[in-house]
Image (tube, rainbow, N blue to C red; front, top):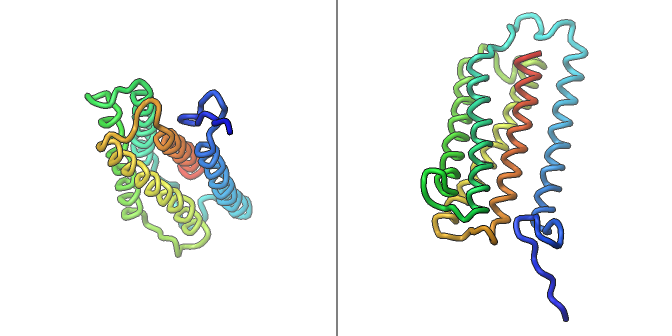
Length: 196
């Protein structure tokens, strides 16, 4: 019985590993979920006489723009953490462990920023289609960010025990792919809620 080499990080000579394929399929299913939310948003917006509806004001842009920049920066640090691991650079300010920890800090700041924004809005999820759609779409995104943060914390804890290397990094690559997905979804949400 011949053995088949295992593809590491989803990029081995044998093609995509089953672990990375699983993450890709999971992200695809989450993309369909968010596509449904965006579809509901555009349907409700198309039915409205005005947008935002009468009684609501346009959402403020400056604070969410800063929060968006923080989330996108966390995507950059996640990417470079993965690059550092591929090069077996685990320690130092630009090493895998430090950059993963920084990604967690930035993601946490984003979530706290979103919670703060919720606290200062003059409407809630019970305030008609506008309020409920806003809180459903951004709230589900926030839940996905929290899930991504949980994955990143898991990666960081395992990294502190020396579990990952340039040859053994599938969990890191899959987590980074998910984190990039969360970034992309937020950019789309930011555009439709704050810029249109």
